[in-house]
Length: 81
Image (cartoon, rainbow, N blue to C red; front, side):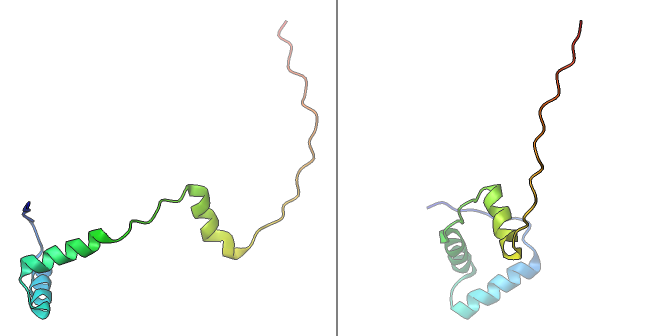
């Protein structure tokens, strides 16, 4: 089994971990292991592409029917004689 050291942990966070461990009746190390295990066992959400994300955000607002501009013939290219 591997071990890690966590440096620069805020005092308030360490106190909250100690209290939560006491509430659950285990050591701080055991509590931290459980927190990491449960956080990392969650299924990562699948990444949607940008178009799907934008559509999901604005779909509830409805759409807009915009008129399509008529096409015109392309102008003749310039002559470089």
